[in-house]
Image (cartoon, rainbow over all chains, first blue to last red; front, top):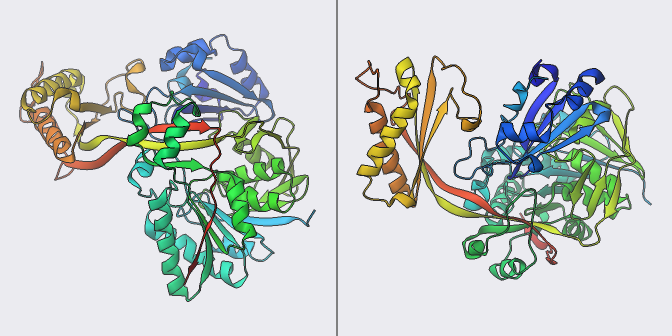
Length: 100
Length: 449
């Protein structure tokens, strides 16, 4: 199943002009754990999808509300020449297409 | 220790609007102050660089006009943070101008504390000599930028805000400041622990964005006690739930368990969210870990050139399939004809909507769309040159040949005449760094009438 279909909320947004955060929220603990424990859900895979170094990708969990946060560096800072998404609000793909 | 403190966050961003009834409902109880955040770096570097606001004057005037009678007649201080969108001097002065107009229209006078947060070139030079650390993934500061910075500002914390409150301001117009400073200064000044005050402020600064349905364009009431606070939207169509409030802690933040302010780290790992009713949530156990070496974030932009764009649609399947060839041909032709600009002075970009404009070329290509949109952008050292580059690129793209071409009369459907648009200055953030230097910002006092 695709991550986008498994999550209740799948969104991205700037965390300042140099980073984007992707929030993945789930309705049930099973889906939440399934994603966290999926072998493909790693900084290496995600870094590959966004063409950024794995060590610059952070995955953080927030058990209370079954939410995973992925923090990525932007390849182009918000609003600088060459940026395509000033607010960073459509950068939850390609991650959303990841097969879990 | 004082009694509890009750305050209103007017809306998520000054100018985004709020329901008049929400304000009226909130005013049924006592309010110790009203706060509103007016700024953000989210819309990009242009607004700080240009000195313009991303919210229009008429929007701001509407939101302020509506609340001003309560501010004046009931003596409720109004705190406006990051005035004008980016909080540099032109933004702050623009907001003061609006306030002045409202004072005149409503026949009132106001004691206003103005807190400018602009930084001098001397300060930047001093900071650049070993007192700047990148913030939030920014690259190292480039000293070349020192003399090119447009409107560098410091994002100050609660300190200057408290001074303005102590001085009896009816309205505080603050330059670039932390969103939390707007809402935490009053509670901290009145004995509320800083951890609780700052966490409440972090939620309040977005208006009713922590409610369901979400409402950046609506009010939120916060009631602070010594060891907890509650949040409740005054608009009966919205409600706050423990999940909606907890989820808000994630918003635009790299870490859900803590956030950082000039005062220190606010630790949310032990924090509890409980429903007091089906619309009101109590939050407790957030705490401040004061920083040993307080820092302040500085922001500044540099000019990168001027932008011009053209926008067109494509329906012909061969043209969509051969967008790469079209782009290649256009680039070549522009390079041949643009004798008025050096090749290293301009950039030409092709945004192919429907194909790969949004996430760039790093995704696996999908099936060709039935229709696509093409935005061609030029950035050059002057508006005139950018405009000429786009005009050249547009005419070449319209007639560019490619293999299998059947529609030999033109490749592009332009929706508008004129087809090209001058986009003005292009900036980028060059200063987004923390400094450990002290910045002694203090309020200036004005009487508007």
